[in-house]
Length: 133
Image 1 (cartoon, one colour):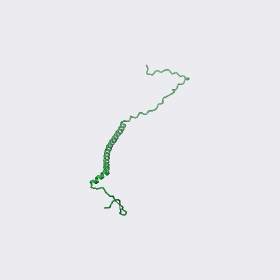
Image 2 (cartoon, one colour):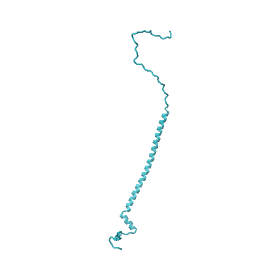
Image 3 (tube, one colour):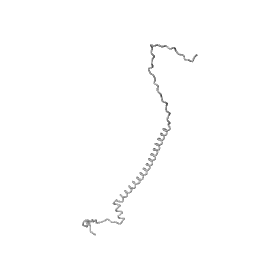
Image 4 (cartoon, one colour):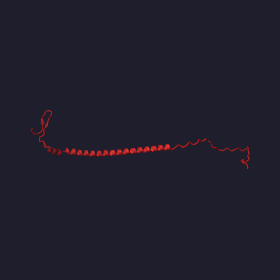
């Protein structure tokens, strides 16, 4: 046997044209794929963003807690001041009542005035009832 491939005999016919394929794929030169980029910078960026956001959230939470304690302390102080104001108002009202004033005047040795007189400042005249004494 020979190494030459076996061929079928050629028949030529002038009347039958050769059919052309309806669709031929276009061949184009394809560039070799680029080497894959490393994911390390992307992962580092994501980790940095996540860490920064968690740190900011922690700082905000800590600041809010400190502010809440300060607000609570101020509310306690305000409540104490409100109680002291109420106590002082009650004391002023009690001290200014007519019965308390009369009792204190009696304790100090004062007596009620029997005859009231008024002085007219324009001419120095005494007005009012009663005798001059």
